[in-house]
Image (tube, rainbow, N blue to C red; front, side, top):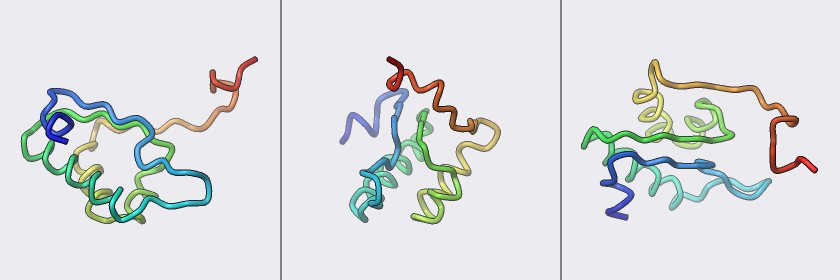
Amino acid sequence: MNELKSVKVLYIDDFLKVQRGQQPTPADINLAFEIINHRDVKNLRTIISTERTIDDIISLDDAVGGRIYELAKGFGMSLAYDKSKNFGLRK
């Protein structure tokens, strides 16, 4: 946990991704907040990729979503889903 909190740049892939039909647990959300909040306080860079919109994240937890929203102002990017660009599905 300390390494995730203190590495110079942290890339989180598939943020809050769970199996289809399920939601992140309170433990998942608490862990996410603990890491993101610590990195914010220490002014460390965090890059997040997710299939969720910021509104989805806020609806799961105001604190996590709000913190990400604050930190991403001017840096966030949202891309429309395009199945043809999913290299894992190519034959």
